[in-house]
View 1: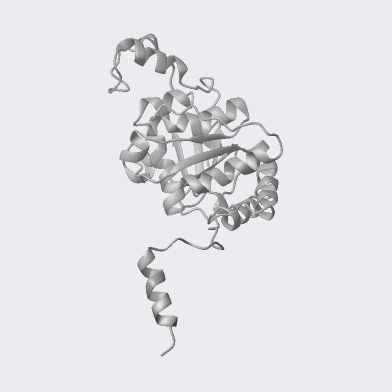
View 2 (view 1 turned 180 degrees about the vertical axis):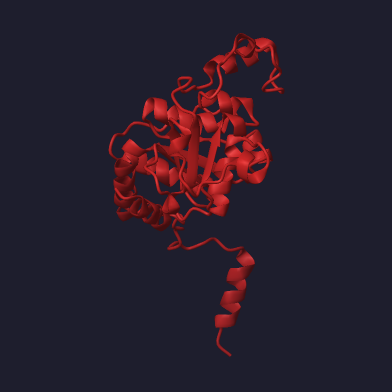
Length: 258
């Protein structure tokens, strides 16, 4: 399905408050789209992956990032830009800094989804309707009702639940890496730098769909919409409410003759 049609379907059935984001991993700098901004080259700074995604979904910018643009080590590791060295894997570094112990950090480190090192040199993210490349993943941010509609659409044709493996941080690994590795949709309760630095709002979560599942997702959105599952969620209003007795007393008084 053409990207414009995917974007139109998401706008029609989901109405996201920010642009859906197309993401593709690149094998060389030569694949970077001409109009893409790069944080270090064009903005004079390094940043986290989630900030790059936020610039695409909020500003509509096309953003390309490689190892030289990386501020967050977890982003660099999950995308395979840097190797997972031993002191990372054994939890020696205080990342994430809020976990109970080194053993917990080690478990998180070993569980971080990672693309194979050296397969890719950069990634590019762009507002879906403006993307001039074939994405591997599409990421949609929304409130729980919007994310639920996407989950319903993904489940429509298979009956298989959509899973989440969020750890409250490193959302980029769940939004980009895991969908690429598994070819399965994910929903993500984002946290950590995504909320602090990428300024994801308290009401927002995200949903990631690998490109191979997009046609099925759009079919599910259309079919479940026709079946009555909508966003905004329809309210059931054809019922008789229970008012306080004083309201009935007043109504009876007003209806009295004379």
